[in-house]
Image 1 (cartoon, rainbow over the protein chains, first blue to last red):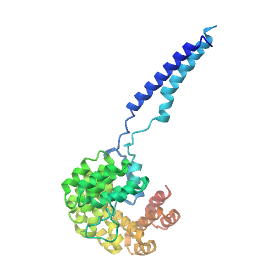
Image 2 (cartoon, chains in turn brown, yellow):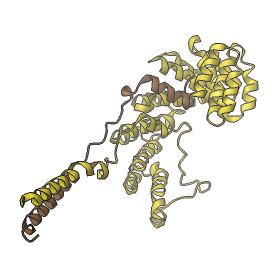
Image 3 (cartoon, rainbow over the protein chains, first blue to last red):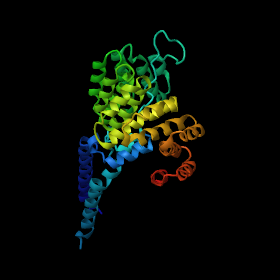
Image 4 (cartoon, rainbow over the protein chains, first blue to last red):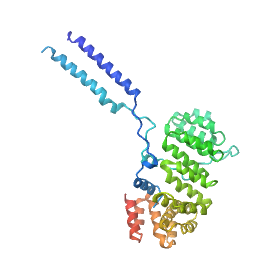
Length: 58
Length: 309
């Protein structure tokens, strides 16, 4: 156990640094928000269904 | 053999690092709040067909209580957003710049965008260029569309041509905007509204919904006024106008609507179909029953398909 002390400490440090580094990087690079749909991007069939549901067309 | 435990330890540490890198992101990362809008979500934020409430004028001391920044600041934190939004709406017409400064106090991003849209709407009668520029500076497609829709509704009575032109900027709400703004126009200037739809612009859906709006808005006031307008529609879309009529009349009184639909001659089935579609929202069983009672097989089948989906 005594012999393992140093490697264990080393590995712990590496793990802590790696984890911390990853965390910092991840916070600095949040995933981009999904793209908002424009009118032209909407499937006309789906659009017609929403309009029917809300009372905007037959 | 001595290196055995050390190798195991290395493997465990390496595994932990892998877990940190690949497993945790799925749990901990948050999507940026200004996220996307699915069309369903957009529709869940209903357009404002009745237009925004008229802001309380300085002279009008009754009706709606006047808010102050001090009162909003004293409210519990979960109520403050709504209060700031209402205050911005209230002051928008008289002090748009001051109202816009209130919007950033709202913590909920969606409400904050709605706040700016409301301010634009409230000043549009006095200063349409400023209203347009407020909308233009909103960086959400959805709320920029809603903002222009709001301006269209606010100016439908006073400048229909301009009001309807805002719908071209209403993005996801474009056809909803044309339906509602032209419907509002029909209430004050029916010939203009009919003339607008008679231009027959855009897709089939755009043309259909235009006529539908006239029938619906007028029937909310008077079903026979709607009938007179619907009789002037382009023949192929006439059923849509009567459908809108049925929907609009059913909003007031379902039984009276059904009775009046019987007086609509060859379009009585379309009118009844409109009543059934409207009833689907509150009483789906009744909607199915109404569809079943439509004698025209084609309309009945379409009606049942809609109310059962």
